[in-house]
Length: 178
Image 1 (spheres, rainbow, N blue to C red):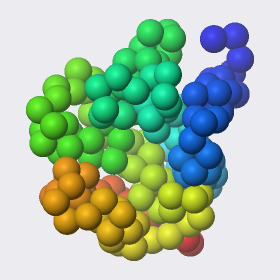
Image 2: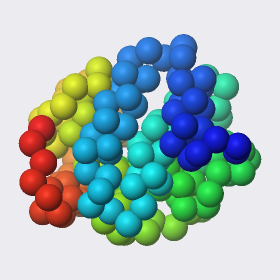
Image 3: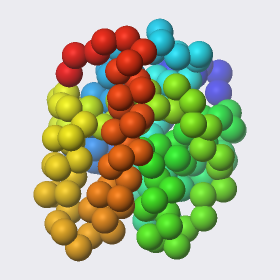
Image 4: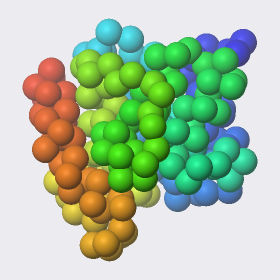
């Protein structure tokens, strides 16, 4: 990585998600949200980079296990990305719950910090097309999109209190309008 971290992350996300324009729009929106709250966390650059890369595991050249947080974190590890960035991608938006349903082990620690919460907030307040929303509407949208019996629906339903907690903690750092 010769670029600064955010520039590198944006380039990687755009390269890997170029065949998935809707996913890329979501990622662009998450990055915008991260920029809005970045000054409230200990490493603003890392937050914005993680926002750009949180869904990189959906990239057709990267998807291996079918569980995008792990696929993304493994790809980033192989690229020499900082371990903390890889862990944020692996654990974004309460991935540990879906990992349990999928019988996948997360090898990266969940740091449970304000930065991690801010990444979850950015993801939970961004629509699939990159617009802003509130977290409760976002959770409803995910459940509607996947249907009642899908592993993603089951996971976000179980994870909702933890996700909403991260959102509330982030919004308490500084008022943020959606």
